[in-house]
Image: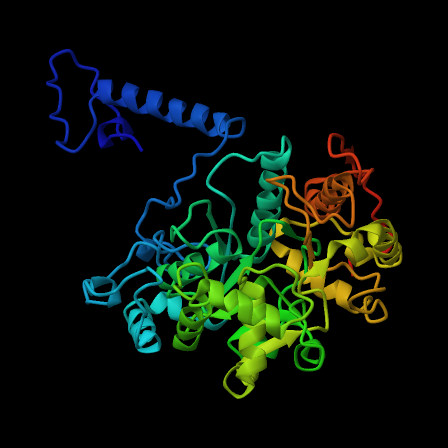
Length: 456
């Protein structure tokens, strides 16, 4: 659009006075500027075809109210619990009389724990299935030259299992009670873990010489809903055979409740912290004829409680014998190759199980696999992966072992079990130990998913 003066002819007389221009018209200089500006815009429009378009949409730093998405609380963990909130409301932690030590029993624990959860509502959801795994080893370096390496791998195995299933884990390598050493050392740790983790319904103790060999399997917690302690055991061996090996106390699941606090007090009263420790050893040995050593031990103590006070304890303790809650390594290790081949056979016929996937969704594939394991059986003679392989009688740190088998069989068996379990983890990362007896090498897994079969 031009000025009105340019739309009319001008007088050619030299005497004629120029007409005054309207105040809203651009001078000539402005016109030149306008033309240049339009040229720049034209160049910019062409340039935009060859350069990325800047993103002027709101970024993640904008307030949630400006975004078309649900607000995210960065203080929450990946499991929807608020890790940065601890209200000022007083809880049992503020009670100067509360003690983590075995010497001082905890009272009204159910009420105190419920009160804590009330003040920490983000932990209340899912609390019934929350597990903290607890394990540990001795305070000093191992005497066995390969002991520390083996313990490291045993611990890594437990960390792998907990990461896959979203469990917390606590590793202790100190004596929390100076007198409660060896197999008794677990009780002070378990009590302390119960107090340190009121958000957890279950504390799962697993001995340092036990490892997970089915990384997919999850405990059937619904089965234990009316019980407070789960151990691998057999009622017939307790009440008919009166055997101190009728259960194994190296692996147990204990509910975080007052009943369990009371049990730990009673249980530990048979240990080295008691003035009657020697007497309890004599009582246990006279009760269980197959017990060969004189000292009171945690396993015999638990069997003794079940045997002598059945009405008080039996209905609250689940003796798990339907699967390898923990399994004796001697009857398990030799079957790993066969189990591996049977699982590979299943995967060859089930494309959805061969599909590569993120480690975080492993539980879904475990559920897929269950339909193919109905005929596998459980326990001795089964080709199903055992949940836990327990190297009872082998002490990786000290190097001691039961004289009924050679020490090398212990350490070689541990390596095979660790590699068998590790393969289940490495598979998600694209590698595998091709030889279960060789920990030093891995092979990349080829992509063999049939493209024409589809994922499901």
